[in-house]
Amino acid sequence: MSELLLARSAGIVNGGDSVVPNDLHVQFDLLAAAGGGEALRANAAPSALLRPAPHEIWFSSTDAAAPSLHAHAAGLATLARLMALSDGSNLTLSGWFDGLRARIAATFGAPGTCVLLAPSISSARDLARAVAFAIQGEPAREISAGASESHDIGQTRDIALRLDDGRPREAREINHEALQAARQLGSPLLLHVLDHSRTGLAGLTRAGADAIATERSALTLIDATAMRTAPDCLRWDLEVGRMVLISGSTFLGGHAASAALLVPACLAERLRHVPPTALLAETSAHDLPPEWRDTFCAPDAARFNIGLGLRWSAALAELDRYLNTPEPLRSAILDLFASKVLGQIARYDWIDRIEQGKGGVAPLILGGATLAQAQGLRDALATLGDQPGDAVFHLGAPIEIGPDLVAMPLSASAPMVNDVAGRIARGVSFERAFAPIQRDIEALFNKMERIWEGALRP
Image 1: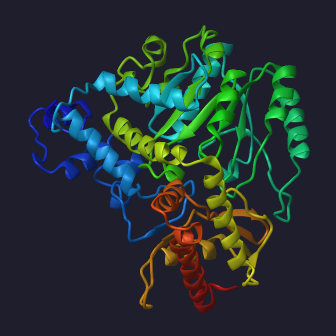
Image 2: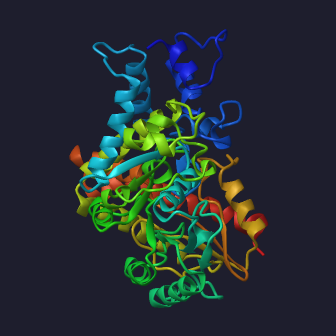
Image 3: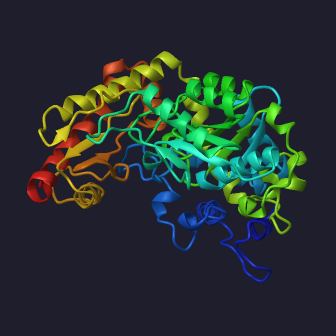
């Protein structure tokens, strides 16, 4: 397929336009930015969202982050195959999208799982709402827990994850409040089960959701967009009839704006109604299995979202590396990351330690700080200073978690784990393999101390 035809199919150029003929990187930037909403429009997206920035330190969060080197290289290789620039390439657009959905289903899905690709987490949630409508015949009332610490949940009856002083609430309290809300709202219901919030907390538990689903005939959506849940757990979710929402960006190190909804076979068999077109506005035909296209595509829907396919191709390459690392080693690296961060936190009286930190997540809780001060700290960390050896650090956007309490999401990413595992595979000891990440953590806190003490401390 020629680069001009590929760009036209992505909606980037018109019949008389042209693309850069011999620069694969430029073509990739144009195509990967297509079909990803405002955040990735080619004329507005920061280069950090499209190309790796290996000289900057990217901690995982739910915000847009630069893709990893490995993920980006996989995306470029896919584009080369599509353009028949690689020897022996026989990749077609329809076969490519079928393959992407099949890879996701094989990794996470139970037999018969249907994979629906989406250009953003919010559009994947709309697809879940469309599935609920297609089963229930009317818009579902929605219950969530932790919307303020999640991403684009939308209008739901939300249950707080924290007490007024910022401490996490007990799971049984969250479950009980969600059940009471379900009884007040009535049916039909869609429950959002948040596996990991941006600060590492869980929301409504699976047991709590099951109790509501049994009493109120609710549908359950597992929000696994943090991508820290074991594939076997998500496979079980699908086997027992829960939908699952995943993401290819941030933690996995893929480009921003890649998500997918996984629908178990038992729910796919219950689709009876045509969902509102407003919930399907960002869906292209080949984002969906063939049997879904007649009812889950708007009449004017595009056939292919080339940018989405490239972004998922990149993310799945990093996911493969992550899952090929033995689970005990993955856990050890993530736990050591949290331990090292907590060790640094203990040095400062202006960082509270409300959470213990686990699974590679150790948020910074700034006591007595305003949201504006925390945002100023984040901006300053992401700016190159004039100190010798200074670096650029990217953390998640701050969240207000209580009166005079602001959390800065800080967590490890899959590329960090993969890099450490790769060094170990080459014969480096665990301690030496982790040393570069430890140096980054120490440098982050040294820079943060200079900024906070110099200008921002309340």
